[in-house]
Image: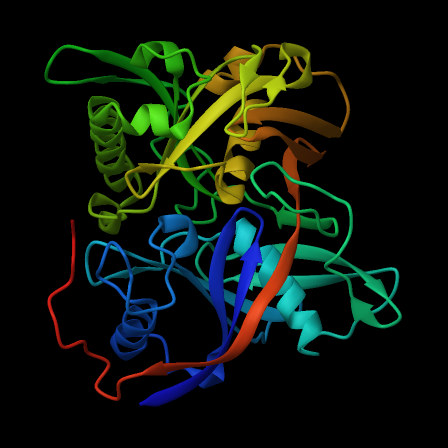
Length: 385
């Protein structure tokens, strides 16, 4: 058995395994085979690996020293698929970035300085810098505290994740279809007005009412209606084709993880997944997002970054939903997601989006070694039901 050092982390509302690059094969097919085997994929239960049988808990982060002057570490995020033998490296994860920053300080990869240290990650997936600021006391990073985020039942310390110059990281364009707003007409005649924005990652935005929804539905309610998921995926694939046509990125035609897709509605009171009531004046708008053809249980950070960008770009469906913004270079938007309000911090400089930040918490769950058969292969048939 191959013995590989690793650490299991909860970062924001995601969970994943963090590695040092030198402990894995170089990026490529062999690394993917090893990661699939150690996570237990393909298998919807991931019973023979470290995966959590959910797209939010089937992630890996690989860290290495960066040669860039503006970064301390290179951060490579792999989404390990459950239903087929594939690791997707197309997008990034801001939730797990909070774990990567904490790992870097706990492992001494970056020196800790009180009262807080910013770890500068360079995301290899989206080719942009992510700054993770972690509180530090007596030379050690702090993960315990009383700060809470929606979707995590226990408190921790406040970790700030900021995407720097987030626009166009994957496709090279803020508007990867060339349009701020466009129309999708399905074969059955249904019409959807959508916007596609690339900031943090590409994401498709549409209105809940176009789907016949209120916008406050919980993920389980949506997944109980497979026709909604099918419609979302159909619309997403149409936009994949338009992105490929406009940018020349033919890989978008088959990418399972990007663009993400979400639907939005005006502010309204709603009940969270934990049964709490969020009043209409506690949020600025409602949002639900899908990832890997399933509804996200909370809201992905990289998708939140893109949502914040879409909110301030004139003419997008999100911007028109929200209406007029107050003047100033600093803006805070309160997104009503399934577990409550998520604050999105937007910094604009000279007419451009300079940073978008989200508050997270993270902690190490365990560490040690994961054991993988030397051939990297399993002996049985995967369970996909």
